[in-house]
Image 1: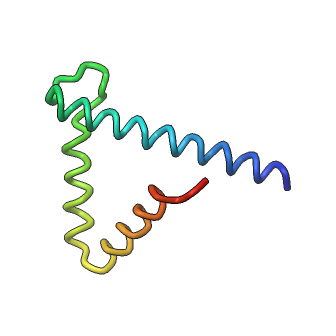
Image 2: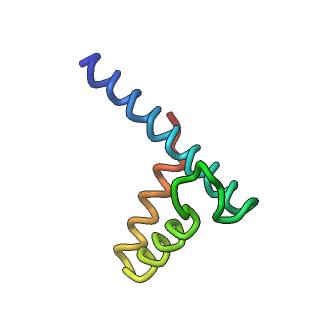
Image 3: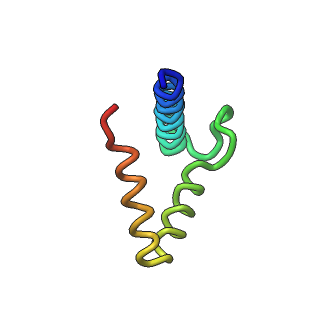
Length: 76
């Protein structure tokens, strides 16, 4: 069972790192525009497309936003 706890902590660390990288990419694109050299794409446009897709789905989108909110605000 110790392996499962280790894997869970490892995956949570990767998720936290990914969230920090996405937040950094959004801030850099807001400050410097879409021409940030080491950001591999238009992160802000992708976030806007995700919000549009969730908003057009009605109740399913609301549930998905709730799940995302829970993931972002959970305590480790």
